[in-house]
Image (cartoon, rainbow, N blue to C red; front, side, top):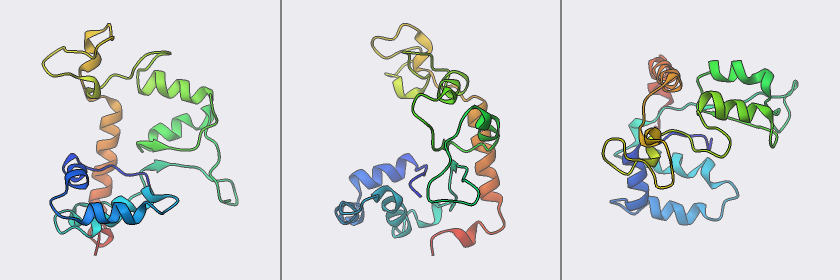
Length: 170
């Protein structure tokens, strides 16, 4: 799956790798239609430093037509509660400008029309520093909220699975 979460250390390895594997595989995967579905998994499972750091789990919320077809069903407001309760950090697919996207922005990301989402991505160092052009001093602060707790619980559940070790790279 292209729906992954990778560590900063692994990302740095892929970008500035201390061996040639990430660059070699990047050149190889350049010719694939959907390279994100295999690149990171191939790098991580073939790296001695990272192969035992994997959790084989698809981290996105998706619903299929019944019987399942090739493409997922579009998610809407009626799917919102189940989607949030799933604790999965990714979801698909959505129709353009669907009302559920506004609800996700407002309720989960605390992002309002024309604004930015709160988060550490915007921090320029130091306490209460914000990105240029932002009015509120709290934009640069990263404070874990209910979403991070849901993700933490999902990851705990994945790691506690009795088959976890068997599902890692071999």
